[in-house]
Image 1: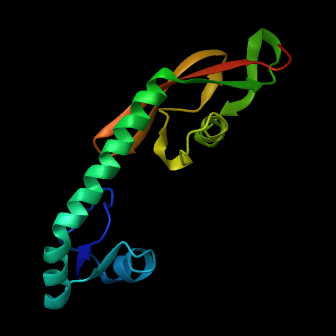
Image 2: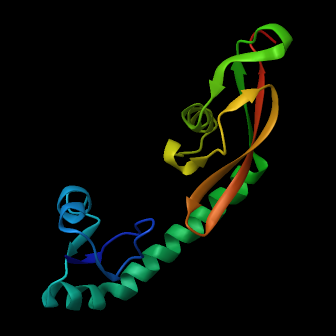
Amino acid sequence: MLVVLRENVENLGRIGEVVKVSDGYARNFLLPRNLVVAASEKNIAAIEHHKKLLEKKRQAQLATARDMAKKLEEFSCTITRRVGEHDKLFGSVSPTDIAEALKKGGFAVEKRLVHLEAPIKSLGVHPVTVKLEPEVSATVKVWVVKEGQ
């Protein structure tokens, strides 16, 4: 099925592009979320007409993401965890925990934007990548400390 993207979709394309996707992906995921419209001549002409507006919207999103990335680079958050013998954590620190800590710090970051190589399982300072846009990412320092300190 040919569709026109109304929003940037990771691993698919940018606003205004005409892409071919499977019928099920379009019907079950993209269309219900209003990320795409069916690629008819009328819709393609409308998108071409509004492409300048969409480009301005994309540039505004990119500028906002860059500003947020600068602020995130300067920010560090602290997460407290219970530890056992030899300062080993009970459990781990996941992207959900980091996203919640960032929200408490005033940053509206979804957990899917937080990228970890592996869950954090030790105390100390850990650099964590937050990918705000495909071309904009920031590194946040996450301090994992003992509970009760």
